[in-house]
Amino acid sequence: MPRAVHIIGGGLAGLAAAVKLAASPAAIALHEAAAMPGGRCRSYQDHATGLLIDNGNHLLLTGNHAAFTYARTIGSEKLLVGPEKAEFSFFDLANRQSWTLHLNDGRFPWWIFNADHRVPGTNPLDYLRLARLLFAKDRPIGDVIDCDGPLYEKLLAPLLTAALNTEPREASAALAGAVIRETLARGGAECRPRIARDGLGTAFVTPALAYLAKAGASVHLSHEIRALRYDGDRVTGLDFGGADFVAIEPQDAVIMAAPAFAAAALVPGIRAPTAFRAILNTHFRAESPQGMPPLIGVLNGISEWVFAFPGRISVTTSNADRFMNEPREKLADTIWREVCAVTGLSGDRPAWQIVRERRATFAATPEENAKRPAAETAWRNLFLAGDWTATGLPATIEGAIRSGNRAADLVLAYQR
Image 1 (cartoon, rainbow, N blue to C red):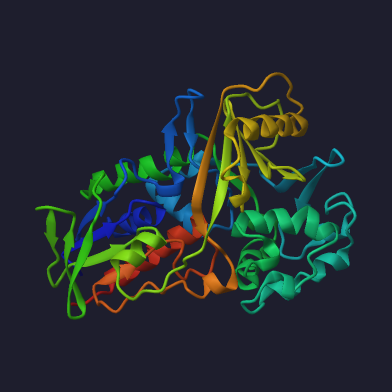
Image 2: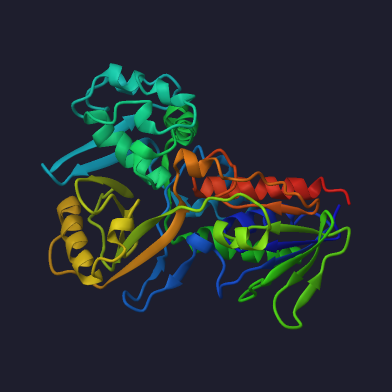
């Protein structure tokens, strides 16, 4: 068992690794370059809206077992809320049509035989053709299934765009298959949607910090690493600039949980994704109408998913590179009009904020997926974590937490 474990990066991958290692006898130190931890799952007090907002919206499903185990460990599982059944509401801005997808709990998909439960304009055979994705090789989705028709346009395209943050036709069929195997293929019991009602930071970050503090772990914010020092097959030091140097003894271990581009600059020779996709998140200070679902999928607009939080309505647009240079005011106006159409709200645009994550996730193409490294490295005491590593899943909360767990397991098995 290592005497000390240094974790570089305070996003969910790094936090998950620290939480899993907290019960061990090792001294845990978490180093985060930013002034606040959480990475893409941080929350902050926004001056424009006067609200606590998330830098990005994330949807969980009840089948995300690693994420729920993590939340249960840090005592925040009750903050992840959603309907008791696997229900997904949709609204098409082109024709003002709305519908709700109802999945039955069992593995056999009885719901596809009920016209009121499946996507309008589809038939049961359409869904059976999805089996081609379940164990597809890593090639573009467009090479595996037909990317047209009601099922694709009204269900697969919005779901896969959100999960992969990449245009589905060019995205990895292997990653899409992994998502489907762990959700739709397991039945509605694994597909109940959950959101962090009071913010991602409140659910995943703040309670993790409290848990780590109670366990005696140290967390160092605004502590950006400049270089790792190597000798032979070991990391021997962490250089934070100037006289701020941490020696890594033979019985110590290091987990690199920084973003892909940062890790690639610090760890010589590792392969990592080099292409990324943006996500656009828009927040409005507004109360959602009574009875509004926690989220609504939106077709044929800039908006793709509308989330209902207490006192706040948030909108997410994935694969959003095309909107990164659009004027903020123009985007906010258009998206608010879409929100009104979807929710039935009216009136002038309320206080708002737009958050653009230009490198939100790696591009989930077969080419970029092939660049994702394993957790092990050429250095015996250095391990990788992050949703960009080879988790078998797209860049999601579930993938990030699994990667942190994997790195922690390797540390626990480490022998100098």
